[in-house]
Image 1 (cartoon, helix red, strand yellow):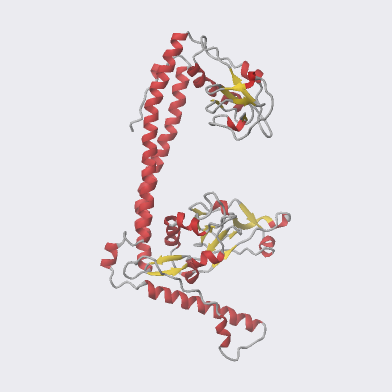
Image 2 (cartoon, helix red, strand yellow; image 1 turned 30 degrees about the horizontal axis):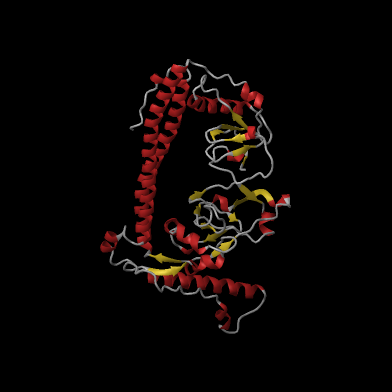
Length: 431
């Protein structure tokens, strides 16, 4: 027999089963009202097959000739929430059957109970329709946002711009300049290391040690707009993976170095971090301080984290679960790469699919191929994206405000219903 546990209250079944003898008095049938007696004190009608009542789950057997079942469904959650709010607990809150039995329910005459239920359901039906419309708007805004990002990184938003800027430097020249500058910086750094050791190069053979970025395989990739090229992240940018200083060493933490965890990388701009490490912690780990304008990419996680990006607006180190892509350090606007990651989110997650833990790594991030527009066009793309998305952000904000208002209105309907004034609730959901 299914064994109904607290976590199953409100569910349509249980994944826990009992084998053995049991008292038929503890059989729960569909439609029985259950209350979870730990945690949030949830209550709901059982929607699953016959099951057995487990400890810390209370069943309320209703005398329906005295109390309308639906009226109890509407009344009880508010009382349980009030008890929950008043119950203090260090860990998990507990509810007793005595507390449930002592809940002082209002008891109108049965005819009034039926009327109250009818009024609540009539007004809830109108409210549900309004909420459904708001959620449809929210879904459409999300689709529009995805369409804008896709069109942007395919060059469709800037078709008119290209016709007006035929003399713009092509991305092929931009890429060659980036590659040349990266090689020059490497050579300069290597030469400085040799000089610090008192070694003077006799010839240029040491330059052959330069780790040349791999040219991306563009086989099967779609044709790009005029002036664009395919490039890999590793060709254009330094990609670094951070680390977490030992948490056993208190001296490594609570310093003045901002440190980003992968959970903070949520398609946003990072201006502050939840945690900071000390200079000692920085020196005793393999993380590094990334410059402002770095794009962070979540690399690990089965949830939403893997594939999400963020732009650093402060110097900050990062943990080992996200890659730091030094976009601004290469002279490119970080917002373009950031928006490309947003458009590429689902595809990026597929790159990190594995048999065990799903994850990206530094090599996979460096090998990612992205469409590189001319530098001037990148800025035009960013401006067009932000112009259009500012409208969707405003729309989403209005939808969220109205959804919150709808929930307050739902509570207002219940409040007036149980004060004997359900007909006085006014509905203004069309806006």
